[in-house]
Structures are given as structure tokens and as C-alpha cells.
Amino acid sequence: MALHGRRRLLTTLVVALLGATFLSVSVLASPAQAAISTLDEGRFAGTARLPNCSASVVRWASALDEDPAVVLTNGHCVLPRFLGAREVLVDQKQYKLIELLDGRGKVAMTVRGVRLRYATMYRTDLAIYELRESYADLAAGGVTPLALAARGPSRGDSIRIPSGYWGEQRSCVTTGTVHRLHEREWDWWRSIRLPARDGCAIRGGYSGAPIIDQTTGAVVGVANTAYIGGRRCIDSACEEDKRGVVRMVRHMNYGQQTAWITTCIGADRRFDLDVAGCRLAKPRG
Image (cartoon, rainbow, N blue to C red; front, side, top):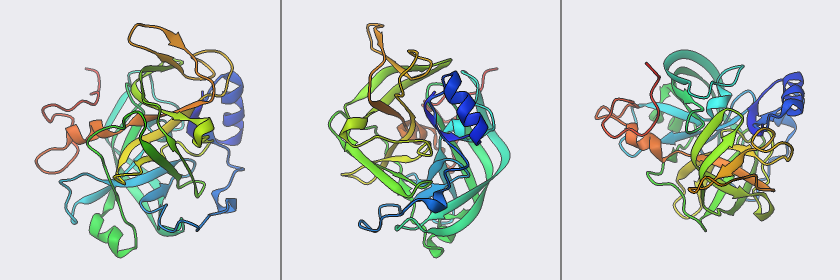
């Protein structure tokens, strides 16, 4: 798999040999050793770094300054193992060390995610951590959240992908979305296509990095997997169109849309799967 996230060196090598393409990263690839460009100061505002994934602080439209801040990343970044094909985690106590970055990519605050509000690799690949700190607390520490878009990207949209883990950014023009994306046992819907040769050649450590619409500045997705060659639908993700035709596309990377999150925000401004019209998967049973 090509999922770009959080594996130890041995696990990363074994998974790669067995056909894992998630954008995972080795512990030898320390972000502290990555050069941080300051040519575009502000490009890393709202981004975050997990122990071996990227992430971002996001804010939906109804959130108030005093509400607990939330951090968005991939579902495959939350546990030592990958989640099952239909597994959904909801409202679990889980402490996660998170470094929140300023606009130049420097650590502004180090916090802990205290609740895992949601995580899944079913239909999408995302996770939401709730912090003890409020948005007001983060603002006082120099952290600016990113807006969460209520709509996904369209073909031809210019996007950028800042990686909090690496302190680097990729940008390209999307070539639309995929009806279904398959990788081993996982099945994702309406995944965002990120052409590597057009500037989105992401690598291990980009898992969970926000995909940001360059026009609106809002988050429309999270990066999660990539083409690396090998066996179709095992070593690399493969696309399925509406007619059921399956193919593996060379030099194509992918992200998962995040607009579904906005359909699950309750009247109390909290994430809630029971909100009428919520499009995210619920736990089975």
C-alpha cells in the first residue's frame, strides 16, 4: 500500500515488500532534518505534525472561539495497526501528541489530542481528534485553524498540500475524482486525483496532510495514498469507474474528501454521527 503515514522502519519496509502503499514514514526520516522553506511565509498555517503523519487544525463554519479545537488526519494514522475494511471508531479516549505549526512551519504549540471523535478507513480514510484547548487558546499560541469546505474539489481546481511532518508543500491541478478507489481490502468513495507529474508527487509522511483549495483557502481533503507500481489493487490503489472498469493509473496519487464531515455537525456545534443527513459511516451493529 501507499498510505502515507506512521510506521516504524521495520514495519515500513515489511509493509512495502508485502504491498502496502500508504504514505507511511520511517523513524529514520526525521522531520527535524527536513529543510523548511520560508519563501512563502504562511503556507504552513493550520498544519500539524503527528509522530509519523501530517495533520491540520480545522474549523467548521458554526464553531465558536470557545469550542474545543479539532485536528484532522487519516484514519490509518491513529493505531499501530490499520483499521479494518468496515471498522469505525467513535468517541474513544486516546492521547495523541500533536505539534501545531505556525505559518513558517515552526512548532507554535505542542498539545495532546484527548478524544478520538472519529476514525475510519471505510468509504474514506480520515480521523478527527478533539483537543483540550479551544480555538481561542490556539489563537493565543499563534495557531490559525483552516476552514473546512462544505464542498469537494472539481476537475481543474488548483490545490496545495502542505505537509506538517516534512515542512514542505506540493501543489497541482486536480484531474477530478474517482468513483471508487480500491486498495487491498479498503474501498474509498469519490477520492481526489492528485497527478504526481503535475506537482503532487507526495511521499511517506504526507498521510493526513490537508488538501487546500488555492482559491478559497479551505480544506477539501486529506492526502492518503499513491501509485508505486506492483500488483494492481494491492501494491498500489486502483480506480473503478461507474461502469465497473478497474485500472491502475501510473503516477497518480490520491486524497479523500472531507466535506462529509460538515454534514455531521450538530446544533451544539459538535461532531455527531446521529445528525440527520450525516454521510459518514457509523459503527456496525
